[in-house]
Length: 222
Image (tube, rainbow, N blue to C red):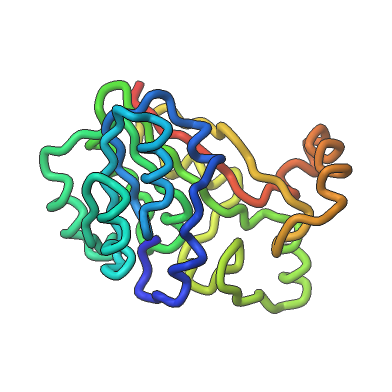
């Protein structure tokens, strides 16, 4: 995550098995918004030949990440000079942006820069919260959005995405796919009804987007 607000550090430290499912024998990995490096450490454990580099705006989190991944650097994505300077002539076959792009002002420029540093068969894996989740309509009717520490209504979010916004992130001629969705019935967490109702709603096109809590997308070179 790249944001000037640091109170949410511990909210984004998970290993993200949903993201790991999209990996196919990664060799050179860049974890953008790596936080304390838990995801990168899991990748290194599962794929022994992988070399993981992590970047994050939070220097305290990077101190921990340096003990878990191969390399870790403090990079502020909001500073438009830092990322291009860091990437220079580097190439990666896998670039991960897990719950990062909604925290920055210009996510399209960041994706474009990262895309330029993909190897020929590489891909960018991105996870984004779905503002088209059904609760958003309730909050709009109520004329008040919640301000929470994480999730769709994290109060450090600067950008909001629904399904039809997602392709706009892909550079021209890139291959864009929605590869997975994370479902839940309630934004704040899973409920006992999730296992019963989600398989039913998932088969109904009109409901599918409304119970999608998070999209996982990939962007690849043609």
